[in-house]
Length: 287
Image (cartoon, rainbow, N blue to C red; front, side, top):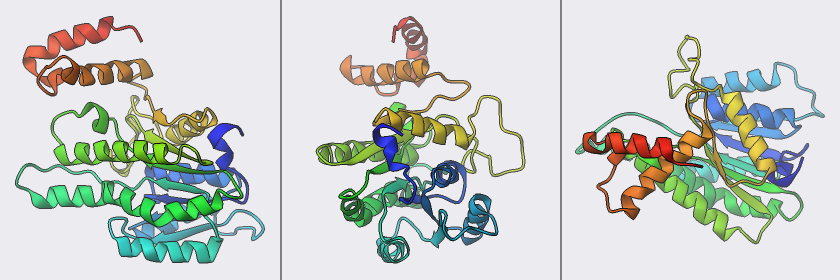
């Protein structure tokens, strides 16, 4: 292992929120395969137990990696305080903190519950997690390589219309991760913003009994892409999928920031009067 991927070391411990399914579970399986202890955190106790069995099986060698679970609501600071106490009591340290828990959902202006629910989990779930566990991770960094991974979204970068609360939450998460990376720049704790592409998970319909669409990645592909980019110590881990390439993602991001640079109205990529120019410019842009 090289670069920031050295955090995936046998005997180190990973704490992963939203760990009962999807990308969180895939990252947990990666950690377990590398010989790490794993603490899965989620609100769904039944799903957590199934995830634990999925990773560790019924019988686990006591001398090998340990897989534990904790039911918690990441939007609640008091749940994080209890989680910190229980995690340290069980494992003694946390080397890898993956703040992955997130919720979706649609709503509109005037719907306070829509904004509150999404921001509470997606944004304050990250804030609470960093505030509770940053000292723990920094303490662990005195002896081992440590890392913090925060899950964002392309919607927090290109900001497509239709889901203001979700986009705002993920935009804020991106900003927080960037600041955290800056603040820890002279330490041995690396920070990474994981931005999945179209991934077949519970949030996108993968929790239902149906086949993965051809264009989507499986969660395990996202976890492997994270590992590969951490080997290169990359901060931005922008995952492609089977429909959207890395080059296309970059072109979309460049067009979006151009709204500011060139004084265009916001979200021109989706405005009828700008669509043709946007498509033409992106097709001609060299990356």
